[in-house]
Image 1: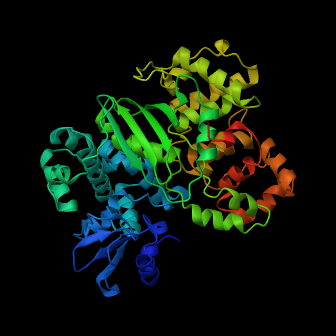
Image 2: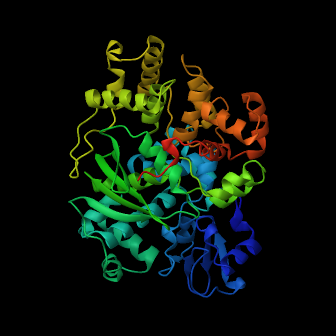
Image 3: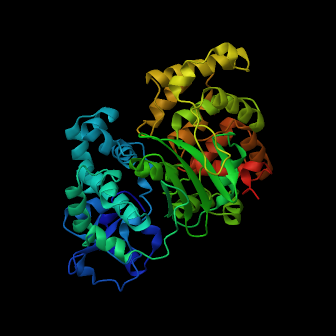
Length: 494
C-alpha cells in the first residue's frame, strides 16, 4: 500500500474483488452504472472492472457526483494511514481538517497554521486527494451529521449546527446529495437498537480500525500512567476528560474485537467531530498494522514478538501540550512518581468538571495556567523545575507548538534547544504527542534491557544502526520491545 494507490487500477480491482478490508480508507470505488461509491470491502457483488473508477477520498467521490453506498457505508471507513505516517503539507493539512480547523477558522485559518497561502493549500490537496479543503471538511460534516441523525434524538436543526453546517439548508442539501436520502429518512432507516443516552449530551458510537489490534499495551499504557482526576480505568474502559474548542467532555473507550466502543459526554455538541478525531488519534486507530508488522517481522529477532501479539499500536494523546508537560514530569522518576507530580498540578491548577459517574474531577491545566505557576511550589529538583517552567513558557507563547500541524523534525529540534531536554524526552514527545511513527528511544532503559535479552545490540549507537531496517516504523518496534517486560504498561487492566 502506498500513496496514490487509487491510480493503480489493477491493484484496486484485485482488492475490490477480494473484498479486502485492509484497503478500506486507502481508496474508494465509484461505480459508473449506479452513481454510488463504496469501500473496497463492500459486501455486494463487485461491478465489472470497466464500470469502476477509483478516488483517493470520499470528498473526491462526492465532488464527482457519486453518493455513498447504503450497504458498506464508506464514510465510516477508518481514516487513511497516510496522514499518520507522513509529516508533509498534505498530511498536516488533513490532520487539521480532521480536528475541525476549517469549520472553526476557515481555509485562511488552516493556511495560517501551516504557514502557506490558501492557494498553495488548495492546489496541493486537489492534486493528491481530488478535493480541496472545503470539500474535505464538507465530507466530514456529512459524516458527523449522519452519526448524530442515526444515534441521537437531537432535533435536526441542532444536528445541523453541531455537525458544523452554517445553515439548515446547507445541512439538508448536503445530506441529500451525499446519501441520496433526506435527514428524516436517514433517521427512519437507522437500526432500532440504538443505545439510550446515559445522560443529556451523551453519545455512544463505534470507532472502526484495521485488524489486528492488540489492546494490551495500548490500554495498559494509558491506564498505568493515568493521572488521577483526569484519567481512570473503570469497568473495562479507559475514561478521561477532554479540553475541546467549544467546551469540555468526558470519554469512555472500551476495546472490542472489531471496534472500540466510545461513549462521549459533551458540554457542546459542536465538539463531536474534534472529540472523535482526538480519540482515534489517541488509540492510533488509523494505523495499517499489516504493513507495519510485515516489515518488523522481517527482522528474525523481532519476528517472534510480532507473531506472539500482532497489531500493537502506539498509545498517543488527546492533547499534545499536556503530554509534553507530562513527559518532563516523568524525567528520571518512576511511573507512580510522575502520576503524583501531575495529580498535584491538576488539583491546584486544573479546571473542575462534573462527572456523573464520579472518579474524574478536572481537566488537565491549560498551558496558560501552568505558565502562571510559582516555580517554588513545584516539588521537584531545581533543574527539572527550570525545564518545566521553560517548556510551559514556550508552549504558552506559541514558540513551541506540538500540535497536529507540527513539522516533526522542526518541533523535535526546538525541543532539543530547551534546557533539560535530551534525546529521550524529545523522542518520547515525538512518538506519542507528535505522532511520528519512526520515533525511536535507543537510550531508554526498557529498550536496552529488551535488546540485551533478545540478542540485539545494547549500546544506543549500535541499536540505532540495527533499527535502520525497521524504518519508518521504529515507534512500533519500541512497543514490541517494551512488551518483553512485565511492567503494568504492557497488560490490559483486570
